[in-house]
Length: 167
Image (tube, rainbow, N blue to C red):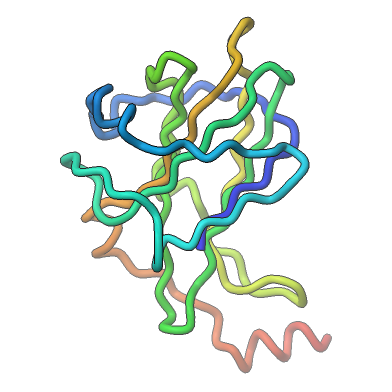
């Protein structure tokens, strides 16, 4: 269950050459969900999401539009492990207001976080973005790849987790 919460955004330029090439026409067909910076945005990709039929992208995607005229931004993406002990391995492509890729965060960027009192096992990453002057919006595309589907993540044993929380 990827969720995005918007704090403040700092733009850290990333190499976008490893990101899948997505035709502008395909991006324009997506419905981009506006994100309110004061709220957490959640998307259930297991039961919803949109389809993007592009080489390098597998399964449903989440598409968000984020205000870029508020200065530096911090996006925190969390993907929780489900009851079947599987997790959506997110990749994030940041696009500028012209739908040009400006940053790419591969699945390896999102690290395993152990469960806590108020949180589940999850993959999580914090993206700091500083939009270019004059940008009104950024677009955030969350997706996974065939390669990611072949990977595994070792989870903390639930009994061990409970013991650690009781200390």
